[in-house]
Length: 398
Ligand code: ADP
Ligand code: MG
Image 1 (spheres, rainbow, N blue to C red):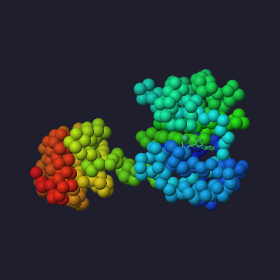
Image 2: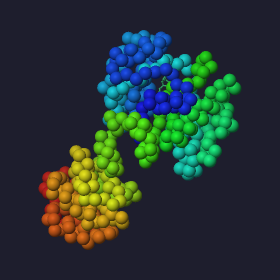
Image 3: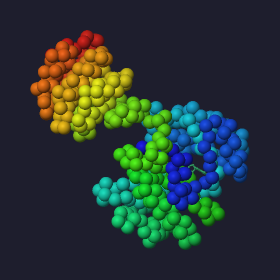
């Protein structure tokens, strides 16, 4: 789960990371009020959307008067901000954050990520801050410092100092840098984050250090033990289809093709998508019903997959181990009887109770196309979609 910059800053500030004074606003008037409250004569208005690259997309505006703050905020509210990370649909701005303008001397990149290979938290830092890490990796690969934290002892002072020296930070600012690095690490570990990124961490012209941007991502599977973090979820920033599925305990991934996929397990989802592409089609989404799916869960899955208007065919591919094919078949029948989908449905069942499952489908009399193998299922799904786009004749039951 992602959170907003202002939320990440507030969390990190609690762990001793210095951040500028700022305030959240839900209207341009509130933004101007925040500016007055913060004081000074330079402010930055920042669109709060779950994406980086806002600066280049017009989502970060430097202002010199309260009127400019009002105007900048007015311009941002309701806007669909399209950055190099959002895709063409962008993200709508419902909140802006107003912050005191900081006199930047140097921009540094500092992040904490999970290194899956080392099975450790890794610090990634670079003196070439201000650009995205992908760009740093391309333009200044030698500037990147990678430092793995030993979990039994956590990050040590000497280790944080080593990173700070590597970034060319002056002796006078080392202790501040050490506090910042250690604070980020503790926040990461305490809150089950999967990423903490400060880009840029800036050295100011008066010898200070402050996090100008902050990004945090949390492990969804650990959210149950962080109710205060779960509350920070902003559904307006998520794919509506994915958050609806998550609310129902189902794992949904939205894509942009035409074939809706209901599968069990992420590996099978990948294989199913590959086979669809190989047969010349494109998946619209995939929904993982997981293990031990009840008929009710399968019926829910159908409703979610069909909520995507682009779906022209549904492909159900279940390899039942813990699951039972008869249950899945019952779910399919229940879903189709209650809510006919109006698109061809191709079903491939294998594994536990496959015969019972097949029987349930046949006896239901529903126009479901069965397939014995994954390859056949994918070919039939693509074939049905192609037939459907040429003329809307219904695919008849096998
Ligand atoms: P994004 O990464 O989404 O583009 P940032 O928060 O990093 O957004 O802002 C982009 C740039 O705007 C920063 O690299 C920094 O140069 C400038 N900036 C951001 N906040 C401030 C601030 N409070 N004072 C001065 N400049 C800022
Ligand atoms: Mg940034």
